[in-house]
Length: 379
Length: 76
Image (cartoon, rainbow over all chains, first blue to last red; front, side, top):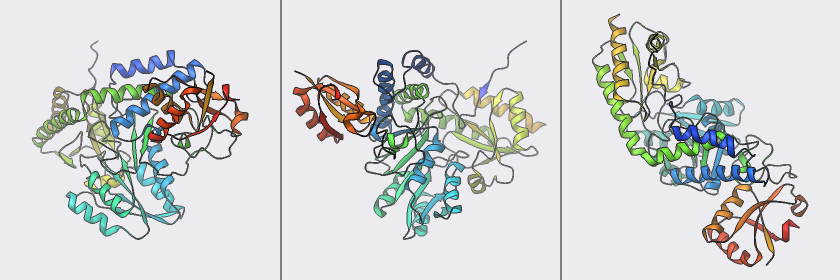
């Protein structure tokens, strides 16, 4: 029996395949750096701690910032919760954009439901100047935080992060950037973009394993803790250490995942984000061109970047996804945990089908998807 | 020349300090410090040749790396 080829286009959920260097790094960490990082000073613990610091250092160099302000989290959702809840003050006002993922919307909503904050949603679907004007109009005297979605997970709109960051600096507001879909895909820089807290997963554009994310922050920013527990130091003090990153890292760190993330960051660094962006944009352009020839396909969102969302007339997203899966093509269907974004893009009724590209996809993958959709449209 | 230990607030700061010292060709090692020394429980320090303490603290000040007291040999 012939094995069907897998065409993986669900890279916006998690990238696959991973670079061989990442797989090797995870294996090597488990084989040779098996101590608990930061929990001792024997050889294996020190080796683990040095590896963890190597990753902090690589992330700080790649995204701008200080290794001491690179906090490892479980994932981007955890990082965003740490940033939003750690920076919010009782009674403050928060602005989020209308492409926000539930990893942003739900923590903000939870603060509001608990009576701890108020929030509003600004329209980020227009031109840069319109977006900035929308933000300016909605800022209140008690506004403390603006949370931006750098690249939406259902379309390819890119937020003018640098301009929003500059505005936040001018008005003394915290700027939290959700880089879940942009880290490793687009240039992202904490300092250049005037970001207070930069949140990202390790397992998407950075090609790390699942189980680790990062929160990078600007100098002198103080966070309240989201979790408390062992930090390896100052253990007789009832409170978490005041210093980052340990302040926000209660419990043992996921060393194998961090080792893989380090290899992933180096892999992306060596290729260059610009080259990755060019490659993914070319795939997106080709797909949009092919879908344009299919009158039964509706595309949502923008036309650049690494994600294309669409629906096929007469089929629900789940039916289209199942049809594609039967042909070995992996896509994501539904609401992608981003109902606000679907409302903005006009796909709120049923959600959509999403194809997300990575460095490992080829033009033949795009053609296979377009050919399969063409077959579905013909019935 | 005996070893001196520079108390550090966190493992990350200690590692950053160690690398800063090593870049200047100064031998340094991150070690666990006897909890009784700091009164805060488990602690870490940077073990150095006592003759290098002045140079290292100047480097750490320059880099903004926070450190604590210089404690005696082997953290006692």
